[in-house]
Every structure is written in structure tokens, then in C-alpha cells.
Length: 271
Image 1 (cartoon, rainbow, N blue to C red):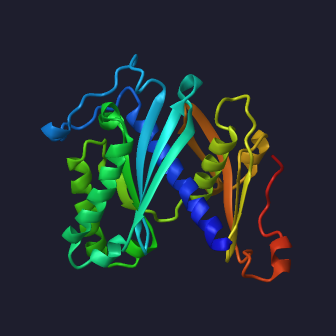
Image 2 (cartoon, one colour; image 1 turned 90 degrees about the vertical axis):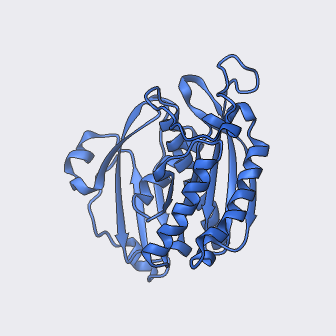
């Protein structure tokens, strides 16, 4: 059960990462790089076309230690450009990217097969406006830096040759930073808390094995003023600025003695 919950949490974080890229690529200031092969150019969907009207696709690769998985998400763009998850297509292959550490080019066949799946799901008229992103986890973290980077460079090259939108920072290793904020955004996206200023948000309590992290959006300015500056973070999402309190409490996870989770080690002002 715990492993299933961890997999679900990772999937939600991947959705969040893809949403951030969708937000970047859909901004009026973004211009796609001119690197598309001629055979892949199809032209973006026109605003009035029935095939692409109100829909946005995203391709997310999850490169784990035992395999690589692709998630092709379809989002329906609601009022004021807010997306809702409409459909997901999934496929996995083995082994993971780290198995090709000594010969990075051998990972190409598997990545290309997953890109072919994405092309079969995303309408051709949407290819040039669909971001493709890969986030690697534990397997690549354990490799020496140069070997991991060579694998990522190989994937970047394949993404550049694909018909989809790609960016250099779209292929990287997840380092675990800002996990609390990522989880808070993901949960509030799914519960509708990010859809407008009149929608209430929910707090997030992540009880891990060795620590617990709490993240919430304070209701009162006093919370922000009296909290340590390192615990207050502000960011922009869907044309709104959000300010959250986030703090990780060490030695209070499920692997520690139960009484320790009830011992206050840091002041939190009511929100």
C-alpha cells in the first residue's frame, strides 16, 4: 500500500511539473526554437479548429530506476486558461535509463518507441504546441555525474528531433527540493483551490519515514510576518501570486517513535 501511495504521489508531482511547462509554453512571450525537422512540421492548431479547440496535450517521461514510463496527458482549458485533466495514456518499458550508463545511445530505441506512442495519441495539428518533459529519479541520482549527464544529453537530442516542444531544462533529475510546495500545488490543482481567488485552498501534511513536512497558504498576514523567512515562499501560478508557509520537521516521521510526532519543535501561527 505504501509503495502504491508513493507512486501516486510521484505521478501527481509529474502532473504539476508538466503544468508548469504548459504555463510557460502557452505564455504570449514564448517562441518555440526553430529546430524542428521538416518532416515533422505540421503547423500549430488554429484557435477555431474543432480538433484542438479547448484542448492542450503534454507528454511526461518518468525515468525511474527500473524502467521508463510515458504519460500523455490531455487537459481541457477552462475559463481564464485554467486546465483540468481530461485524459491520460500510459506505457512503460524496461530497463531504466541507468542500465545504459556505459552506452547512452542504446537508450534511444526505448525512448523513440515511447515518443511514437505519444505521436499516435496527440493529434498532428497539436504536435508543435505540445511540450515533452523527462524527469529522472533514483536510478540516475546514483550514477556518477558525467554518466548521468550523457544519458540526459542523449534524451535531449531525441526530444529536439521530435515534433514536440522541448527545452533544455525539460530533461533533468528531480532533486527533491521544494517537495512541499510541489505537493501543495498538485493537491490544490486537483481539488480546485487554484481556480480563482474566491476558491479556498487546503493545507498539505506529508508524513514521511524520517520527517514530516507541512505546507499551507496563511490566511493572516501575522503568520507571514512572524515566521522565519526561509519558511515563506511566493510563486506565480495561473496568473496569481501564491504565498505559502512550508517547513520540514526532522525526526517526526513514521519510522520514529510515535510520541515524537506530538512534540512541538517549531512555532506555527494559526492560518
